[in-house]
Image (cartoon, rainbow over all chains, first blue to last red; front, side):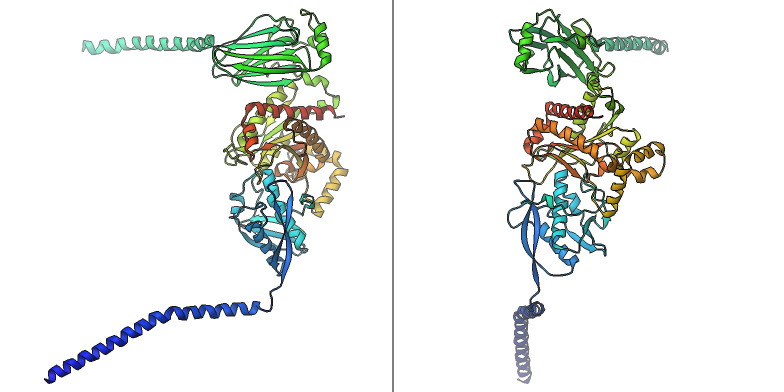
Length: 195
Length: 416
């Protein structure tokens, strides 16, 4: 009798343990995602807070080529205010992202801007990833469009830039695809802009 | 034993007979194919036109090219062609010339009028090309009508050595090139002795690519070779190509070819590529110096002292300093380069009927180091499907070469 009683107590104890353990397990799995969501919400809150006292934006004019003529066409954009280097990078990123008004892209979409560095005398060194060259359609007209869409967009919006020098993967390059000389800096060509 | 000995002694004899048979028959083979491919040319006069009829027993590819009073018919065939013509009694056709080279065959129809029009039609079987020649202007029609059939016009041109009394003459395009246009050039133009042509890109560097896959490098070379041929035939000038095959050549070496050959003119030939597929027409560029202040100063100095600068190049051509000078060599010749560009562009505008595109200035790498008047011609847009088709067409390539040639001649005529 005793032995049986002991056995049944043991069984009940085990059962309770099992129920508690499974209950804990269910609670753990169910509550897991909720907590994670909370953490993310908290983080987002933290990020937004310093931006709340309004990150300054300003309007810039970008230049895009068109399907129908040889001119560069202006298009307005808002970019975050920053140092000339950061603004220059953002302008180039917007050019790569392409037009919102149906103009053509002046750069291959795969190209990336690696860095912009502006020297004290106002030379902006703009360093692109190799896709700028590898994915470029080639041809004199296409090279001129790429170069002057960038140079005109940079120089008409950032007064600190007096001339633009192109780099690819951190190094000087002779040409984009065999035509226009990249060993020398460029200045804006307002005569290419549509009126 | 005896059998074994007889074999080696008999074998060489069989071998010799066989070999000699092969050798002898191989001598006859080309002549067999030659007799098979005969081109016959006939000239007939009608009331207001002359007809030139080319007949052949195999289909041929023909291309036309007009220079002043001459109509060239370029005939392509894999085998050599033999030429035969009946005596010519025509008011319009003065003589026929025939030349056969490895590149092809050339029939030269020399007309007694400088201003004539032609129409051609081709029949496949049997192969026959009919060319109708007509005077272009009303005045010439009258002059022609007054001429009696057996009298040949313009005696002064005929008096040249190349114009032989007989109606048929054989010419070699290279050795006995006519060099007719030399006579109309001023004395100053005779200082121009060497033209360097630069077919853009080559080798792994293909340049722009057409929607059908036509490569810029191939078109550039095809046009340059044609232009070289035209210049050499019409002018007593040396023409040097920076490349005559599909190979890589650096941009600096192209300028070096020009400078080492003492080029008097440099013409780089390209086909254009744009982002927008509709872009069309031709453009002629000369160098723009992107002006940092230092460069503007150098340019001002060079413009004021260009005669000295030219002399320096002659004297110190072997020097290391040359390489530094070459970097800005073109800046001394910008004015002449712009004039040459203007003359070439005018001709190309007429050809492609695109007056909206003109002479442009851009910092082309290949032009920077060239120490003579230098231009870069963008013949047409290979990125435009219509113009890509044109660029593939040999007839169009010949007309482009002819237009650029005319531009060069007009530039040389204005030299003083």
